[in-house]
Amino acid sequence: MSDEATPPDGPRSRAVRRRDTERRLADDVDLWVGTASRGGVPHLVPLSFDWDGEHVLLATPADSPTGRNLAGSGDVRLALGGTRDVTTVEGSVEVVPLDALPDAVGDRFAARTGFDPRAEGPGYAWFRVRPVRVQAWREANELAGRELMREGRWLVDAATAGEGR
Image (cartoon, rainbow, N blue to C red; front, side, top):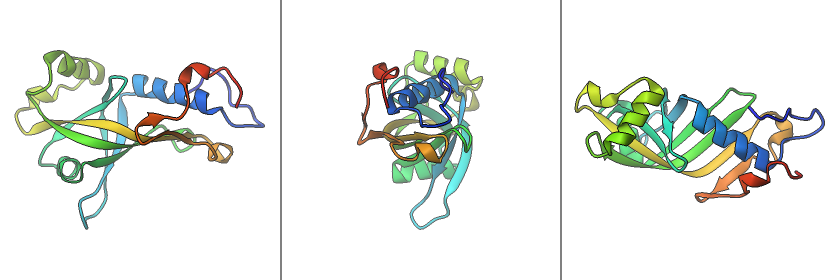
């Protein structure tokens, strides 16, 4: 994902990982959504998303297992990438009625994902995720320092991506 190749003898710096993570959020269209109900079975589904620089926007039927879990718990874990270049995002969820977002936000989601939930009828809802914790790693040599965001705050400035580890 990075412009810089991962050196064979060391991990990417946190700043490079943050830059790679933000690029993935801006460029990827689909991610995995992990939810669970209280005492229930965990549920994992792929969904399309939009990233506005602060929030991940999802849409799914409100009465689906994912929709019920997102609304019920208010928490979610998202995953992007493959097992050798993974980003996980833990976040808090805000349920937004389908007609409550500005048209420009819905239009952006539809253009980016190729799917417009507003055309599916009133059974859908928007789910706005505020990242609380973000981790990114490729191989075992990147496990240390994989946490990039804690309590909703980035731990490193992305502008320092060219600096040392």
